[in-house]
Each structure stands twice: as structure tokens, then as C-alpha cells.
Length: 341
Ligand code: PMP
Image (cartoon, rainbow, N blue to C red):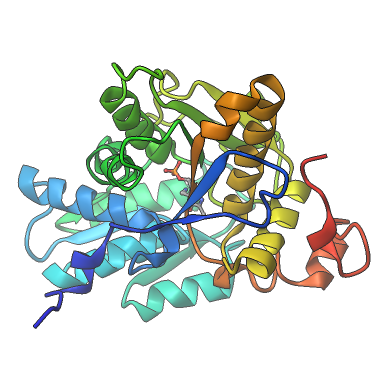
């Protein structure tokens, strides 16, 4: 009989699928790595598993312990499903701007959710950061993964995401494109792909980050944007700025238009950071083709899609919400917006 012993054994080994419609007119092969097929529905299952296993090995997390993390979404789900296997308690701290739906998902997995006010400064005792620090100090046996500073995040991608892409493309990947949030995905996956291809005749894999216009990674000042899970207003330790060869900024409007096209035209119901990464991948493919048509025709661009679209039905996939921000260019037709222009 073929079966897994626990759902957390099914993390990773996600497939690549070729994008065929949104790539119209482009000669490069563009392959999407579909991370919503992880059991918790996102790329974050990978770091959750590795961070928990490393904390067990180092003795920071012991039987009966509690995982405390400020997280509102994907990382919480990953941690909750890994925690169940060993019977750890999970306490997640979310600011009150996080939707009730997202809090309900965490609670459904058995986590306790503590809600903090958004409208207080970071050093206020009721802030998201202060409350999670206090809970981690006060709860006996508490351990805080701290995904922004935990180097086991990038390590999980070095050990799994990178090798999967190398093996599934039979070493033919030429470019890797991904969004940057904590920076764990680009740092770990990008570093592995560069290391393994360092002596290849065609040169090492080029690593390209995608970032919401306004975020620090693409030279912004932390200006607000609506795409979730990516971009920062500070530099996390999990991010090594030496890994990406370049970072391409993408606007919310372009990210969301592409996210809708991926659902309607490619059958990929994915989140907004996926649309953002695909816009960057297609711009890269277009630029390669303009600069060197022969190289473009042989390029294999892998773009990582971090999560699924169900968590965004009332936002990106709602015409009312899109229109309220002026993102629908034609009435009901964000799908026709040519984001490559
Ligand atoms: N997209 C989404 C939806 C995410 O939740 C995250 C994680 N914050 C990312 C992209 C970026 O991944 P990373 O933190 O590894 O840079």
C-alpha cells in the first residue's frame, strides 16, 4: 500500500507546469512551480517543517512545548500542521487588520489566535511585536521560530526547493524568478541553483527577485502596497542580498491583473504574489528576446508561485474590490490588461 504516515510527510516535491497562454509571443520556456500543492497550501510548509525539526534537534523546542509566532497566514498554517504531529500547542499573534477568514483558518487547525490592535506603534506594549515577545517569555516551554531571522528558512529551500527545480529541469533551468518577503525562498533556492550550476558551460543560473513597487528590496522607501506576503520596510536576516542578480519592481495593478489571468487562462487559482512573480518572469523573457533572440529561445525560466487564490476571493477576484482601487481597467475585464506594456 502506498500512503504517507502524516500529512507533513507530503511537504515539497511540487510540480512544474508550463505557462502557455500568458506567454503568448514569448519564445522562452516559462515553468511555474506550483507551491499551493503543498498540504498546507503554500510554500511556507517547507520552512515550518525545517524550523521545527531544527528547534527539536537543538533542544529549543521540547515535548509539550508551545510555538509562538507573529503570523497571519501561510507560515501559521505550516507550523500548525507540523505541530499537530508532535502535539505542540500553537499561539499565533495577528494584527486586527488581518481578515476574520484568515484567523478562522488558523483556529480550524487548532491554533490559538491572539489579536492585537494595528493602530499602535511597534514599541507599544499592545503591538503585534511586543505581545508575541511577551507571550514567548511568559509561556513555559515557548519557542518563537522568528521566520525573518531564522536561517533554517533559507536552509529548507537550499535542501528541497532548489534540488527539485534542478532535477525536474534536468539541469536546464537558466533563470529563477520568485517574490521576496522574508527573503528565505530566493536566498535558499537561488543559492542552491547558483552553486550547482557554477561551472556549467552556459553560466550559472540567474536569480531574479520580484518585489512590490515601493518595498525596500527594489529601492523603495516602504511605501504601502496591497499585494500580500512580499515586500518589506526593513531588511530581514533570512535575506542574503548577494544572491539575487536583480530585483524587478511590479505594481499592484499589474500583479492583480496577472493573478486574474492565471486563474482564467492557465487554470491556476493563485495568490497576488504569484501574479507579481509571473509579471517579472514575463518581462524578463521579453527583455531576453529583445537582446538575444537565440538565447531567449533556449531559456528555461522557472517562476515560483507561493500560494493558492482561495484566500483572496473577496479581494483580487472581486470586481467590486478591484474597482474600488481603480484596478479594473475595462469594466469587468482585468484579464485583457496587457501587463507587458
Ligand atoms: N508570497 C506569499 C503569499 C507569502 O506568504 C510569502 C512569504 N512571506 C512570499 C510570497 C515570500 O516568500 P519569502 O518569505 O520566502 O521571501
